[in-house]
Image 1 (tube, rainbow, N blue to C red):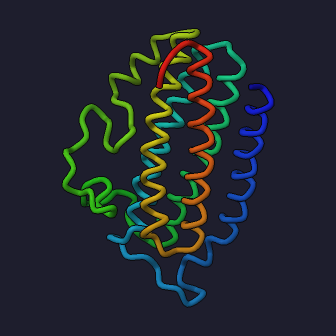
Image 2 (image 1 turned 90 degrees about the vertical axis):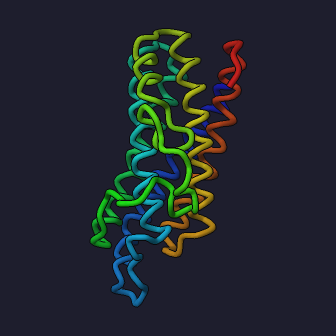
Length: 207
């Protein structure tokens, strides 16, 4: 398990390093190379807005559990998720700035995926996979193994929702660097779901 965790952390670190290359290539999304800047209602802009929100909650959950357990394996995983997703969130918001598009949409979440008619999110869970405010509050009151198990369960659901959104971008987005980022998200989060499922089993719990 330790070797597998190291491989995953190394893979996620590679995503962060690659992200630096993506950031350096951001200038290619501003229309200066002849490509069109995405419209505000485009999949590119919608994904950037929604995934930035989705990522922010993952960062929040990760820092909550990091302070609620002394287990080094969970703490490393939480730190890695927080750093990777904070980095990606910065890129997504940076692209919206570069495109001179609002960071908040007038439409419903995931409207760019054709899901604008889904029921409005309740208690802070704006998109599939997101935890409710009540669930986050309860997580912050747990400690030790109980906090580890609940974090893993919530983050698995969160990742599955994120994978669904990233796959939607792969199908619909047109900006090359954003497509590459979305593909990387799918691969890394699928690996993390697999790892977190194993960590739950090791604790006698189910996803």
